[in-house]
Image (tube, rainbow, N blue to C red):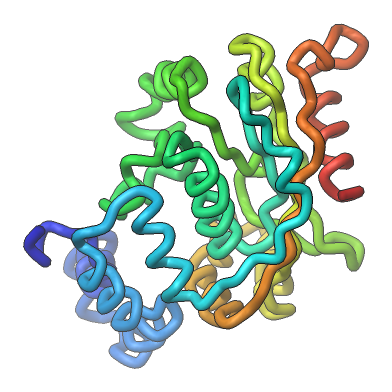
Length: 272
């Protein structure tokens, strides 16, 4: 695959696209800072080196690049029969997604699909494993259909039901409320729900920035710009992953609403 056909981070182009002629007025030191924060050169060098890899092989290359190792507990809880929806807390925003895809993709011979932000579809190596989520723009009409097709497929589904990585609230680092989609779709398609706890955290700077944006009512997710930097700060680490016992779909009866069941599973994850 030619290097110009793969997705590369290009801060200059992004600014031109977003700011138009005004992009020339943006101070060069600020542009350089953005390139540094998103680790443009390092990540692009890596992406150019793995153009021949896709799916689980691409995730394995990411694990090597990040020098991420896993301390896995509860492997015996991974069902060998039936389809599963794997749901996890989302403490990091980088390594956790890569690691769980690698772990489960290896175990199930690549029969996994992520529900992910559609931006990640630009990563050609990851695209075969993704069901893109974009509730705004041209894909919004296709969103329910894509989710439906994912759950109706013969692949296991990996989800981070919080949608964004964990935040610090009242001194505690934890996911925000989980969305109920994994409950309703797992019932419809008769999938086990398998809770997973991923141990890790981002920097104090990240949590303080996210809370400051919330306090000042800034709707643009500025903290997201720093996720690449957080990913690099979390290189060369071993992460503990705990896999809980599978929950049969029929457990989620009418005694609770789907949103209440989602909260129940979320709390279960934090007890693992």
